Image 1 (cartoon, rainbow, N blue to C red):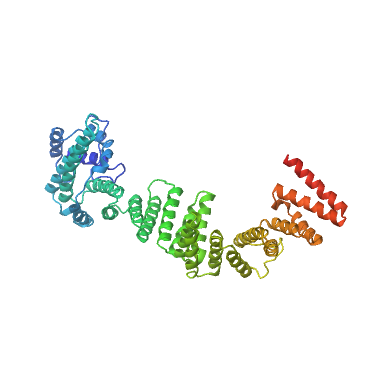
Image 2 (spheres, one colour; image 1 turned 60 degrees about the horizontal axis):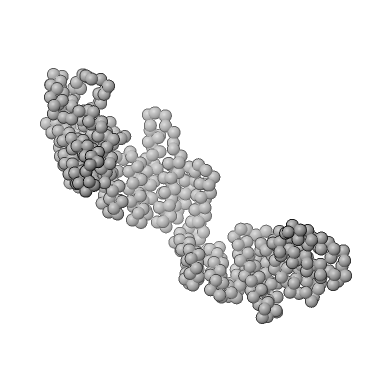
Length: 503
């Protein structure tokens, strides 16, 4: 019986690097001889004779230890019979453990050790480089099949043995991983569900189950299990007997995954709560910004996550050059929105898509109405502050009006002037460029021309070098026309300094 227990421990180590302790202690491997472990209810003499007999009946401890480093290589070939699950269900009833008699326990250990022998043969075959891949795979499969059969028998004989449970859990996990890779997701889920019942204290099992759920887009279930992984891990740290520090990176990843799953499930409230929790575990400023960004993303239309997803999808269409589909989608999306701010953004994006489609004037009209909604006076001065969102709209409106003014300059100067003056009236990032264009277009009205040109000169940082040289040249000429020598000289100096820099 002693060797049976020893071999059970060794096989447990083969299958699980960090498992629950077995019911039998492991002897000191550095000692050539050791006192026989006497199980409760067994005479010491009987235990000693059993140890002596076991030396010939079972593989050595060295071989068991050798198997530990090799068995992982056969993960993809491990198979486990579903018939074992009813015995695992029995194992949950720990009050019935004493009902397993000594004979059945011994028989279970013998079956367990037969599985160990197959695993040891398996690791030897795995190292046989002279075998071709097909033959090697078949031999591995046969040996693992034998090991599986023996372990099935062991768990059926004694479903309460912790060592057997631990090894079986590891075998199940390997199979679930393989099934996930082969996209047999439903079977993988069934296995992980059994694993989480068998080992409720292992966060990695909940993580594995959550990942499979996420793959098949069962996002609510994925979020639930990401949350369980996080809670289980935190509990393991809290209840650790030794001093253990929380791995903040691990906790952050669990919380972020939970938030992502809730977001894909369109569960705004739960997702917001999870993102905020993840933000508290964030390690870097970039992580905190990322979590806050997702909070803002969810709140874009007051928690209307479906609308946020639709907006992103339509943006991608526009980015790929499919402006027609994007425009059609934005028109449909606008009627599904809850908030004015979201409708404003969709109008802005729709205007850009219309402009790309050649519908330039309708795009300008849409942006004009948008800007008017945001500011009763779209001709506010440059010093008036605008939030970043409003500024985006102003920049697009100003740019489109400028471009339309330039296009009409060749065929209709009156229409060109209207668009250019409108662009110059908007507080956008290159307003000075529109003022320069108006000033040049109004050359014959010298005073009005100088007025616009002087405005542009007050914000030279909004102009490139060539545009600044064009501005100063025009100002020199216009001031000369009015006889303003001093002003003409001043602008000529600026012009000449720029030309020297450009050279």
